[in-house]
Image 1 (spheres, rainbow, N blue to C red):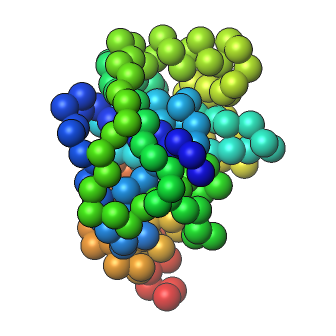
Image 2 (tube, rainbow, N blue to C red):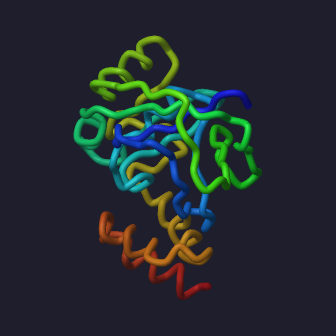
Length: 185
């Protein structure tokens, strides 16, 4: 891969450093897509707030609760261009993700995005992204967001301590279902 992109809220990164991922590995995430990097350059509760995925070959952004897209994406951010030579895709990653296990990577370039929400809305108009604003969503994603329960139990079971606490902090109504599923295991 020649060039990959890393989105960040921080515009002062002289180097991109690894973090512990949901896969319990210290790595740097990137993507071959500037648009996908843009979707990740915000501060949020990740899957608990939005869903970024590819469904039927189309990139989607799903708002899980009312008003989140405006709260999260109505801000600025930065896209960093990185040399892609140390990045690889692994089977356990989402198809649009690549990771590097380097200790740090110096960006080749940085692009400022004044308003992410405006930019992604333009990408939606161009047909490059489908945005599902609450309560709209694909049929495969339940309106109550209960698809997160199994995912966060799996995160916790794979060593991501506190994943279930994070889930229940945002969705306390899942307490009984989480307890039942944990007791069955």
